[in-house]
Image (cartoon, rainbow, N blue to C red; front, side, top):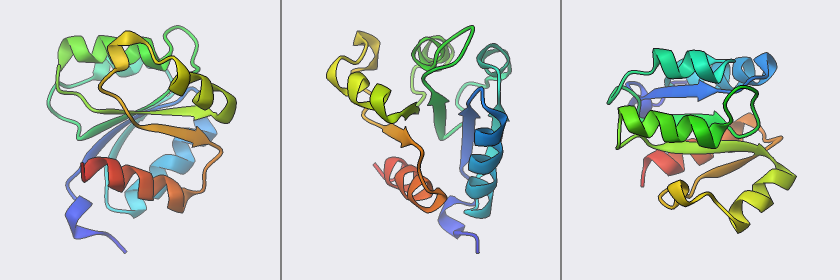
Length: 129
């Protein structure tokens, strides 16, 4: 059942684990979102379109370029880009204690593992802010 409110919302999803991008993409699409998913942060950066996405969902722990670094690069292309960070629970708590200075505007950290229903709920909440 698609939510008409979110039917036109676009999500950039970046996680180096193909299983995660597959599951999260299916859940988001079932909820009515349009999703561009990447397993490589550098490919996501080169494919990024400014002012195209309503929200970027970035895994923190990725090779080549971590989620924080990717966010900084995305901000250079689109200063209004919005992001949520996916992270393992132990990183989640560490991130809240000392977020990088460039992340002062980011308040959305989503711990993994998370159920699809809770994941969609968090995304909807973030987009309604």
